[in-house]
Image (cartoon, rainbow, N blue to C red; front, side, top):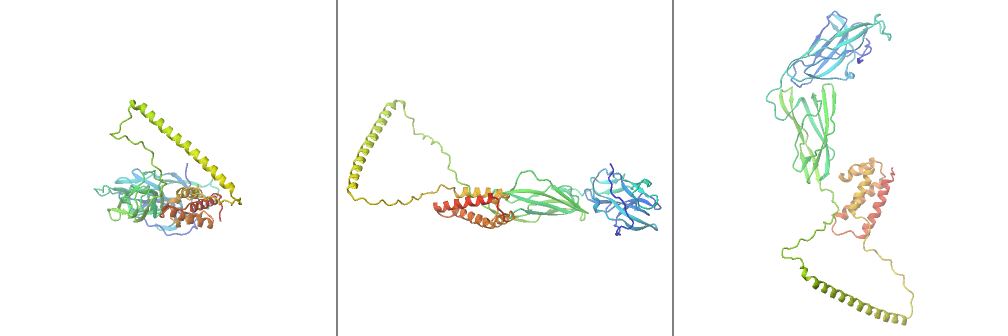
Length: 457
């Protein structure tokens, strides 16, 4: 199925200057009114170096209607078509004293995969030329013409030897930029690092990168997201993401990635290093301490198991102890009854007085949740509002995200105050009073209810 590239090229299209080319071939005599020219911006590239092949249609008179008849053949050459939106309109040009118009109808990005003479051939167009010399929507009387593009020949040069051991295979002039998602993280938390390579060259995918990380920061062994490749004109770019994890606290400044590419302009292998980044790693979130599991005490070497022959003696001693306890209990009960009878007699002898209302008892401790449990539940409530990792955010970052989620300003202030109170209860000297913990529990319940209700500004 043929792909329609260009419909009607009108003679009054915007006039643009013709592009300069280093190598051009035309397979049609100059006296023809319709022919194609093949041109390369570099006919002598290095292996892997990107070049551009342009097919230009020359015509005189009425613009023809055209479509692809066949695609170019390019053994030993990587090729990728540039989108038609990048083509220029037709413009007037003089050829051998005759006036023509020209239009770029197809462009390809090429990269030789091997050295030597390589050729792109076989591109043909089907052209419908109006018989009356005027453009018309009715093409039944148009004259059909097949136009073949001349071959485009590359003389590819082999890369210098020996190549560095870490050579990535990329050929071109590139820059490498990295950007961390956050500048401050907690120990043990993941950190996404965006990596972008851009420049003039062939970047069909991210070249192999050398990762340079300081002690205490590792690359997480996880699935790598798909590469994002973009090409515009002679430049290309590719982006990917890697995940880092810090295992210890501290301030780190380092250049995380680099790769080696061959620069065609200098003819040398060059190291392309990224920009340096600064990361501050703080202590991980404190976990609620758990009591150690009970373990059986091992018997000492000098401890001996009870002898079975001592069984009757042990039973007799146990019975004596039980009898002593029972006797003491009966004696205490009798004494308590006598004392109660005496007190009752004295109370009856005294004049009666109104009974005072007893003061309400104050609980020595609250049944509420611990500060650590409150903080964990508050983080879960924040996650339900759409905030992915509240535990790894600073106060400013958390407040900004809550405002973006349209959380009420009063609720934001209450969340910040609660987190500050929880930190004080966890890390300040001494223990928080039961009254303070009870108030903290009430505030936390009210704030989480407000977050879960979905009330927004």
